[in-house]
Image (cartoon, rainbow, N blue to C red; front, top):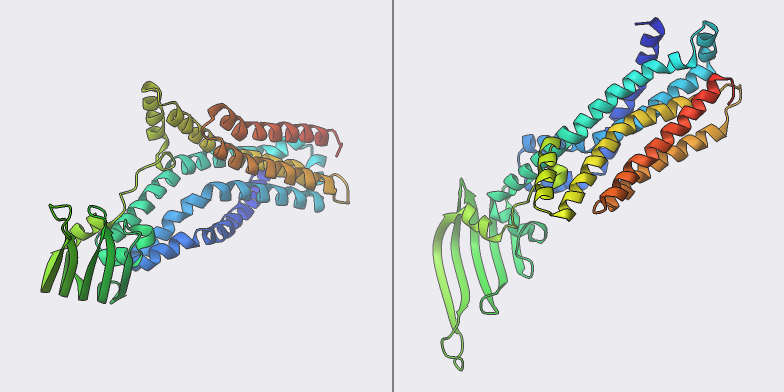
Length: 367
């Protein structure tokens, strides 16, 4: 390996890893709401740390791409400003040879990004949802306290205040509609406590209605009082918890996604098949973006004159935003496979053609 390859690769990767750390920190803030929601329902520090780690692959694909852009553009701006680029070319090293090590690194990073977006990110999505579901499955007190997002009890009045890390509650009052007879039911409890897999209660009262067999009679009111009761916590959570989440296409590894797309095509489920193709195109586009952004940064970071041209910076920013916007447009067109794939791929092809033309001009001495 030539010495200048080692030098350029080292300088590129140094900025790349610093940028990755910065972007992971920033982009994790955008997922702070999900992390906070999980932290409120989980009493285990290990589970919270595990959930946070599962969030990192969500932000890695875009973090890697932007870090490639920043690394390459800063590297070539410094080479131009410090006249190192001129020194390389004076030694007989062409611009093509100078960019070659970065092209190899960009290809490796693109393959790594494809692995992340196709395997690691879907698995982390699956595991984070699974962890979230498991953390709430065995504690009905948590579901009652956070019923708006996590339970089927929506149009109800509930008074509950949990204690001891959501393992016990006092003075519980629940008023909810009974869909079978269009009446209200009431349950009150002096104390509820989760012990192992059982929910124990003290001083429990129930008020409900029993439909009369005769239409002109009044409903029968049922009042039941119990000094103590115990039941399986899983039976309560099974009744009030929302249905278990289903694995969607964004949570499928690439092999499973290809099999799913083949199955949907065979049974002529066109809409689902098209969305599967769009998901595959999105993952390919994220992988290509690492190479595209490196190429953009290398092309528009080079300056041949002492004064820095703002035109190069503006064009580079424009091409970057063009690719980033294509991800949003492609996702919005996920039920139109042709347009979705065009939205993902065409902007990157345009960027590569323009940067290739720019490099050709630079190699001939034109800015």
